[in-house]
Image (cartoon, rainbow, N blue to C red):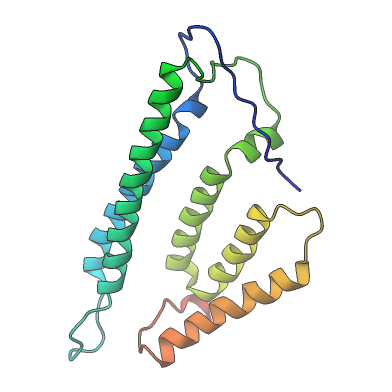
Length: 185
């Protein structure tokens, strides 16, 4: 197990300064909502290669973006309620001035690490194409959230190779939508 699941909560007393970890979930909800809006807007710019399609290729990303935005609003509402409850009961985590080890910071911020990984993945798709970045992204994402001590590297490799290949060829042959080919042509 890379990261433990035990997180200690500070509490008691009147707190003047709060740790950023108190706001992290609220901030991540806002970022999710911003990404949903960006995805929705970018879906308008997806080019259709066939003129006779009644629903364009941007329709599905717009649906996903709308659902993601709704979930982001629900998550934001829930996180604001939790924050208010903790503040009312003086259970917010105080600002800590001690330095943490890299592993502790990494494990406490897996959601942000995952977000950065997604951002790098999206940029890589533009320059390299769909297949290679998808394989690398899927493998790293699986490793990031695997919590067992013994990892099944062979299974992770097979899944990381098979799923992006199936998606790529499915979109190409059945939906007749071209995903970015990149350096593979």
